[in-house]
Length: 89
Image 1: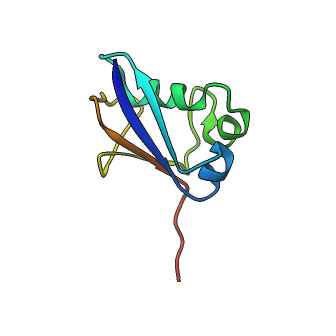
Image 2: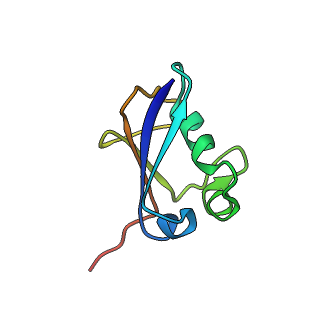
Image 3: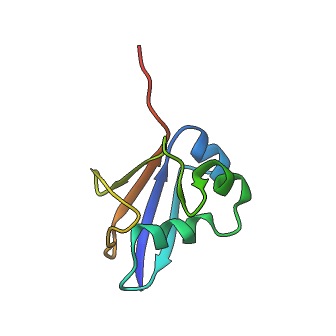
């Protein structure tokens, strides 16, 4: 088993009930598996993030500071991040 940490931002953190969550995935797990573990039982976050089997187009995923796909492998201790589009000004 691998333990990975999710860091969530903006309304995603609100829907999840906090900014940081630790989940466990199988040793051959992917970002998608880690997302499933994060979303398990959290209807508000699932509704905000999911678009069918994938994630909503506007949601950004990162693995250890680099853009990631749901199919990317994860390793023990990885840091995953998810955030909505960022605007500034």
